[in-house]
Image (tube, rainbow, N blue to C red; front, side):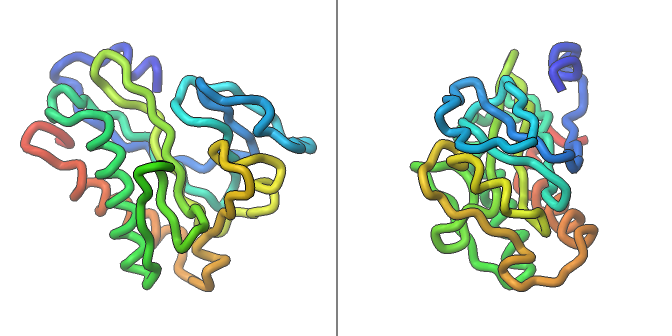
Length: 188
């Protein structure tokens, strides 16, 4: 992501990268180690994204959002809102009502977080992105204060009783992201 971002020029197309990571805790730039309560055998990786600590693992979809914000004429706060709204719209397609929170970026079902955001902007371009819990093992979240919030509950589509395939969720999420992020100047 860093190499892609650093090598971009004004003609570089924006991209979405979809991945699943092996079990790992990631600690953002402002991350405080005291939010890692019991890492057990899960590796901790310091990263240059914003935010505190989170868990990534199989069953959680990560979408890296590699966008030229200057070209799109949007700021970081607007990008966050667009990402949250894309996830909210995706979840609504699977009969899950969700919302964003200005005081704690991400997407929530009730008080439980189902999607996290962690971004970095360099040279007017964003990288890192969002994670959506589909059928991830939620137990590792008990080893941290998710996103630096003590006692924050984390949920997944699976825990909420949905039985949709990961492929169906990813396809819907990508279409929603494109819809929310598309402007006249982005996403060629």
